[in-house]
Image (cartoon, rainbow, N blue to C red; front, side, top):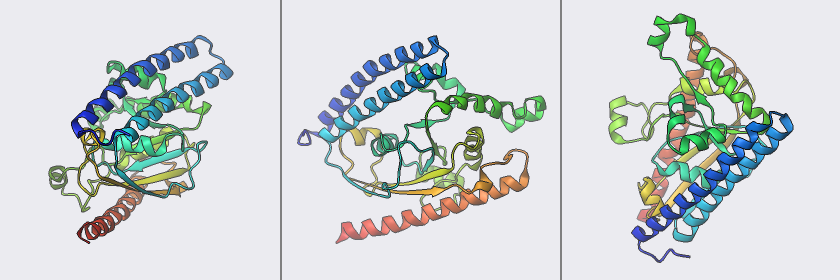
Length: 304
């Protein structure tokens, strides 16, 4: 254990280790992905897809091991009992900081299918990472703005169809699709600018969640609802790798998605849009109440 080292040194060691790990395993990842393209046969594609995911899970396991060697963070996690590596999940979470991704990868690696994000099409050109996302079959989506569709009505629905086509790759193995409904990290300034009705959360973006579920074509029926709380208010990536975050509190709730929100036209059906927004708002209201209870609980704990 290297927890005795100064935080700055720990951060440098973890970052260097993660960088070396990324270069080696992403190179291997892309190589296997190219082999997958050579033989367009279902058996071969499925085999190579599983190998690619195994490499990605190994990458996360090594990163997690580096963190455990250098951190003495106390993890308080509830609700992880009923999860399956072979399940299909829609994972939602509040977004507190850049450390959230590392926290979620550490919690869910090899407990559920690998977390995947819907990415903007332009991100495929990000050096190195774009190739890794492509190799891992992350769905790249192209969403048209409402203004664009008003000028080009013939394009209506084509963004969803293109994303659904990209999601066809998921038929080979189960998947967990991750969605930060707030769309951005929480900050007091953003909270005030939005005039958010929630105490600890930004407004959720229901349209993005509906788009994801529609694009998955009915494959996903279970949701993992994650609530992240950092009692010492440290949420940055750098604080995480330096081991400065003293405590991380996570509450996980696995629920069945209501069938009536899985099928519908969010963009063009006002009744469905209103119904979906009401479901998301209720979900977010309950999450906000949970964060209020956690904040009160850990404030009392720290005072005692």
